[in-house]
Image 1: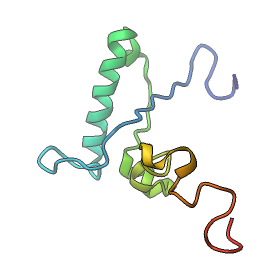
Image 2: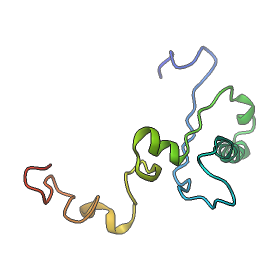
Image 3: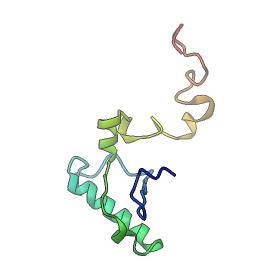
Amino acid sequence: VDPTLAPPGRHVVQLFVQYAPYDVDPSVGSWADPAFAHAFADRCFGIVEEFCPGFRDSVIGRDVLSPLDLERVFGLHRGSISHGALSLNQLGYARPAAGFAGYRSPVPGLY
């Protein structure tokens, strides 16, 4: 562990939520609204709190990156860290699509 990440007696934690929806019902909110993203994070913190009492009170700072933020900042399509659907028709030999899973692509000279 890198001791320069936090002062003695403190720690860094990453709470990664794999399946946050990219498309949100507009009547509920929008990832473009930071308050909506923070409210979602608060709900996630609440779940962690059920299993780790005191977790919420131990947090002194946080960055919240929504699926929209992941797309805008890192270029991850629809906020997907796997760069596409993890569906049966796009896994293994068919990743990212049939014909593109080998070391060569259907385009000559393009790897």
